[in-house]
Length: 410
Image (tube, rainbow, N blue to C red; front, side, top):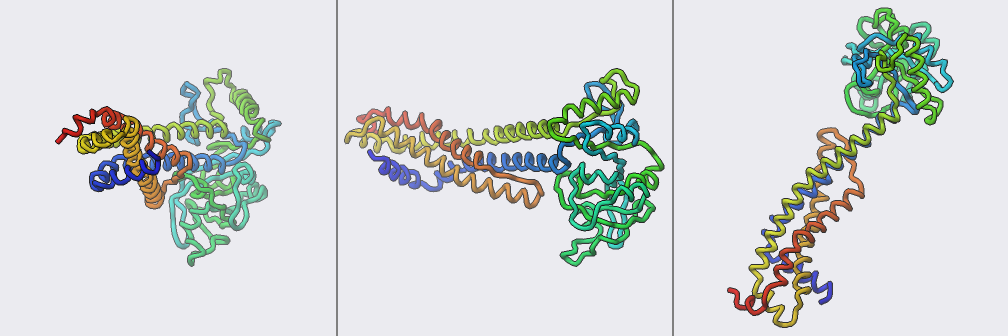
């Protein structure tokens, strides 16, 4: 029997009872849609994390303060402890592998403009922050070394906070450049708006305000010399590991600590962080796909149940086919193709439905989703595999029927 004839007869048999076939395929549709939607969200999350880390700066090391708690971790990191000083940042800047260093003091403050207000992360830093953190300007300029030394009351706004405080200029909002904002009880003049970087969370670059370090120390942090963190840019990616070791040795010596496990700081390597988070996200994506795959097994059982019912209903037809010369192989292939057609159709509908679900989640929940060709191919492969696996037993049972007994079946 030609393959075209087999496919034609299989389609006729499957569509003979559309409601039953549709309900049976529903399990496959839900399973494939779940795989596509969940992996799209997982891939989107992975891409978003990677983009956020890359946007934070190239060849970046971050030194954060904190009291050691054991296991290489620190307590009170990211500004919660007072162990890093400006003098530490100056010492790090003398290291051969350090291209640029940006000390930071940060905190959340209520910021008020003429048209709005918001609770914002304010970062007091130096002019080198723009280079270290890859800050591109959408308008205006970043503050200079002279403005840092002179403790000028100037501010650079992240893209989102600029919109929150002054509205979108394209939609009738006010141009932030030259406008005055009040941070705590001090007035600042906006001199620049940073280009959007994206990212997740309330303290992203887009939701931050940048002011000169000495200004922040004097007006916001109470003349403190302690830092929230120090961002360090390595000369190149090959020197990051060596620079990490040099910073660790330098600060241990400066802080009078002999045991590295008792360090009151931690050096975070951006490359290691990116690798760890990417690996974690990939594992989570596979886990979500495996969970969604359970529904595919349930759908496959439904396919098997329907095909067994079909074999029983078509017993006389099978007997007649064998009586006129059909071989066991012909009958087996016929029913196996019917099962694969059902699951493949469910796969097509499931991919489309999963894509629509991921788009809806992206639009209404604000989560990134990325559908890759790899997972679409896997979805179709799974649907075909389920058809073969769960259609094999019904097909074998149909092929093993005795033609004489089958013709007598009522």
